[in-house]
Length: 230
Image (cartoon, rainbow, N blue to C red):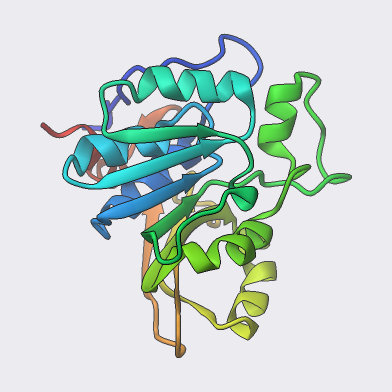
């Protein structure tokens, strides 16, 4: 084991390239089996591709602000029952309670923090020039069913910083996946699910990605294998 490979997807040859966080969030979100879902900031459509592939009876919408990435998403999702929309997800007149799950792999860095990529597509994918996770959470809450959930992935330190504010706004984590690159390192990423209502004890898991350079652990291989299983 340890030799799992993602399915080939179209993406820019240089500059922006999707990374393992999108695959982690896709696998994490899949466990909730949404029927109607919205992928906010889909990029080239990685998360939407796997949700559409693994949940063919579901109905999905993937939104991407950047035209170049939206074009790649349309190419990757041409054979899936997923609608790709180019624009800012916060400004669309979504029908109330249209979705039972929102999923968002947001830019990890605020403007002024971290090195800004020279390539504008990559820069906008990494830095929140056009909205943070919290901005999308607030703007799109009306489009979510009352019992719906929001799934995301963030660096562990950002998750720890933002989660108290979510709870003050009535959002509580009910599932958390803490991801470490290697067994001797702390978790660097957190995949999470938020629901509205009362605080709950979240189902918490830990996942170690690699046992050697670019060689997945058996646990990571099993986690990702759900995405490509026929």
